[in-house]
Length: 294
Ligand code: NDP
Image (tube, rainbow, N blue to C red; front, side, top):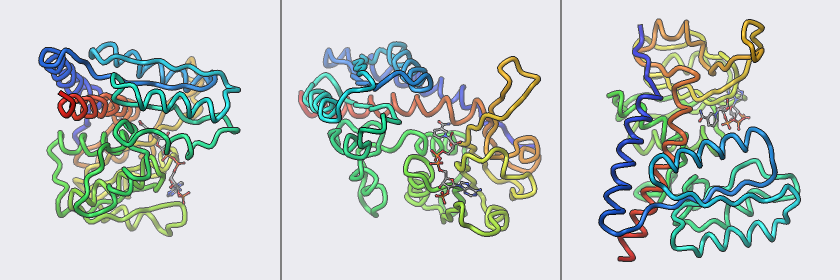
């Protein structure tokens, strides 16, 4: 049976480490990290994510700058807000909650965030540096960074191993594959046009699943002893639950946990780690800025 990687527990450990570093920073320089969380409109899911991020900041002593804009805000006004945050020395990280309303060009807005404050790691220059040998991006995207932390903190060797990433989105699959490559794995990417994904996944010592397809990866697709990180978060109907649904991953957990060496559950695996990586990025951005300017 696989070792189940407890994302909540790992996230808690990292949060304690962050809180301690925030305390030391404040003691030495009288300054704390600042994270600006910008939200446009009142989508329920976005409000809930933003609420979670702001609460997590408060718990760790990170100052949160809340910018709540109406659904009808113009692109120019949103960009003006971003520029003001870029210029604010107490803000070390800026996050614009996605998706944005249809009349706003997301790519344009994200590119306006200063590279030094791009704590989501979505700026094309940060991704470009991630893809280049010998270059280091200022920030790594949070979910892929969470996957690597979970592997490393579980004692999984990445160097020299065969890794398969299922999915190639800009926010998860692609940067996860680049991070594995930087860590010296041999990486294959499976996407919606890949034929016979099971034969490729069966070869993998490490699988990162981020396709958004409920339980598509069966137990028989997993190489014995492999490390399986399941990013997928899919709601499926479940009449036995009060809510009428439950969350499942892209991996068939019950089957795969009989073959894998390590596996993350859904929920309770990658999910709790993603916000924690955002806080870690904010701390890193703050340390870089404060140490350079004192
Ligand atoms: P996207 O929909 O942007 O990307 C999905 C990717 O999976 C695409 O590259 C797509 O291929 C590929 N894909 C889709 N179907 C298949 C298939 N049948 N076989 C192989 N590949 C397939 O999703 P995201 O990357 O944003 O998210 C992926 C999952 O991760 C979702 O369930 C999401 O909810 C979850 N997630 C969880 C987070 C967390 O913190 N736990 C954070 C972010 C996402 P193609 O490019 O060819 O279309």
